[in-house]
Length: 129
Image (cartoon, rainbow, N blue to C red; front, top):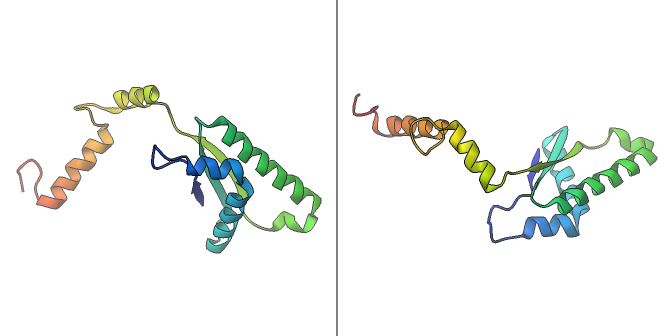
């Protein structure tokens, strides 16, 4: 189970704000969802560019682990929780795209996906049936 704590909308800061203000609320929801689907592990992804939020989530996880250690019956309850700092900056992203493209400005995997999608949609590959 993965909780996306990264912003989908660049102008928004709601994910970071919620994780910063109420990390345990987010973790409670993640645990409840993971338990509902039977996941043994749950990860909350946080943007690497928000180190304060990453630290707060790490601290909240440490508080939970300390509480579990003090409650022996809780050791076997719920999924294991992790935090992952994700994301790259624009310069690193551009470098990565340059490294994986071959014939165009598109990364090779995306170029091939476009070719396959065109072939499926038209029944042809470069005009050949």
